[in-house]
Image (cartoon, rainbow, N blue to C red):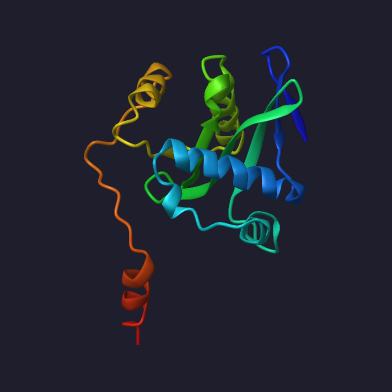
Length: 168
């Protein structure tokens, strides 16, 4: 599905399984920008299985300028017990550096906000690295606010496996 935007020659489309190579390439670009390339273990096969397989765990939209992919957003639903409604968690929002400042990232994010409103979600949430000041300033400019009282917690790798083995 192609979504036209108000920006000249810029459109958004929902990704398909045929886009797994493209998505992986964009993930690797994002990881390099975030200085986290060493953490990327995803493959085209894992993306195909988890994004387009029997259970799709997330959705991807591709940003295209003049018919060429220039960025993407990957998101999934979460849930607020306090509101009794779903939300959207934005895992990745990425626009290639040479295409920044043209409104493409803002268009991607506003499309996700529209999806959230259309699905009666109560919020869109994401994380940003604390050193990424350009992104933080952009998020403030659209009305996003930091959740200063909350700290992200993560259980993964050997710690995840170890703790899971404690279940009896």
